[in-house]
Image (cartoon, rainbow, N blue to C red):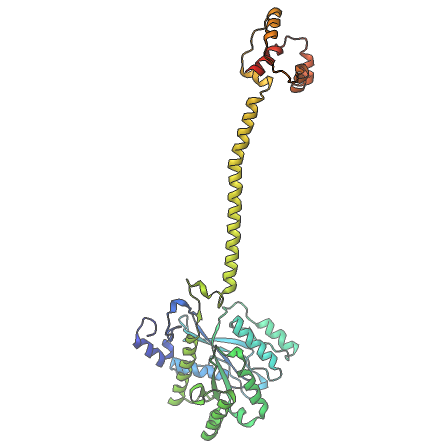
Amino acid sequence: MYRDEGKAVSHTSKARPELYTPGSFADVNLSDYHIPKTTSILIVGPKGAGKSSLVNRITRVVQDEEFAPARAQESYGMPSNGGTFFLQEYMIPRGSSASFCLCDTRGLSQISSSDSTTMIEQWIKKGVHHGEPVIWTSDDSDLKDRLIRDGCTGCEIRKVNSIIFVVNAVEMMESESSYAHMVSTAFNSPLLSFKDDKPAVVITHGDLLSREERARVQVLVGELLGIPPDKQIFDIPGSTDSRDAATTLTVCNLLRHCLEHADKNLRFCPKRNFTISKVEGGDKNRTRMTMFSVALTLFLALAIIWFIHEHGGQNVAHEARHELHVFQSPRLYNLTHEVLPKLSSSVQNSESETEDVPNGEPSIDWRTARRLWFDEGKVAKAEGEPSFDWRTTRRLWYVE
């Protein structure tokens, strides 16, 4: 069953392409796939093959308007007199609710096959957008300047989901092997294939040939390109005046074939399955893992710095307080203790005899220490003034 609309809507959308929605032909769990807003069908082929005429034919069939005005500019006369130079995007049906679009392109270069290969590679890998100029190296400078000047670059870029390859039946019958070789080389390019699915082929201008010649061309193209003529080659006359039921049915079958293969090759992107990183999206996953590793490393570094700052700072403060308690300066001691009254000289002598001073310890020149501790100029000025009993202070320093 396709989606949740049921089999009835699914079968109706197959018969009526205008009811198609992206992913409606996919028999898979759509939550694991990337569903485009609009399915893009790229139309490629040699110059004068009838790509723009095919766009107009499809538009009239889908909209069921036989006399609807042409949307794509068609060429008339010699192919060298004009043609499509910019990639044109046609929404079907018209309006914001378009479910798929046709991308009309410039004819493949018949002078340099590398130009065609390079442009096709750009469309398949980078996507297409409306108004994109198609420039060949063989174009003259004036044409290149005009294409660059008039090109549009602000439109939405769409990924190519399916391809229609257009071939002129008359050219296949009348021209030399060069045309057939160009068609075969371009068609068999790996860039035009989605996995194992090759593009659908449309043979145009068959109304200019007899019925036997049209059948012979269809078989010839099938053998040349290696695809089944009855399943993957669609004979659609180039003239838009042909409104027979057979042509309308062929157009519907062509669209159904392209849309089914577009939904068949949806891009797989599971949301929770990370085991597919090697198959698809590996670069993005590796970038995310690298960013996560860097963030984790920074977090651990900050945590270590915080730990050292908190616990290391407390240890340093504790050691500082311990040193301050053991080696208190005379000035701090005098500020935090009351000064004892000065004793008489006899008492001082008696106390000095009984003073418990550690033996073997070096004596301290308190006058010099006082000069170094305080400002030397202020100490010299205060020499004549009454001072503290430094002997008593020394005794209290060591005894306590």
